[in-house]
Length: 102
Image 1 (cartoon, rainbow, N blue to C red):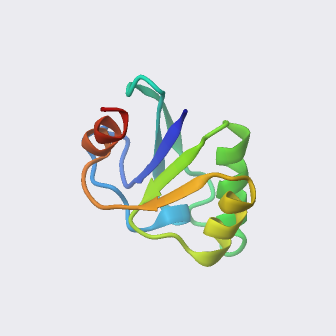
Image 2: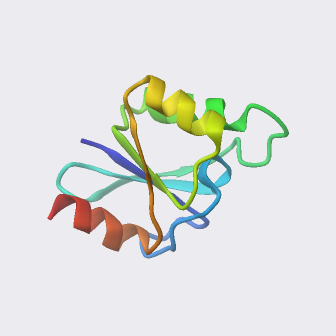
């Protein structure tokens, strides 16, 4: 299992972003609950197709769950087509990741 958490900065203690596909960063946590990768979201400021582009980026990284404060319809649809669970949640990235693995 690999979880991607949308945040506004690259710190594991960052607050979960309410932006979903437009979050500035995605923190990737592995099945053992450790931060494995920090991705800067190069699509965050694009004018169109942000949701599908970000979804494809996460799909290619074999993410199984995405956590964000909110999901836009195109982002959510693209993820769910690939059986990736979309979880709307608030809090701090590292703490929420730990809760999923405990």
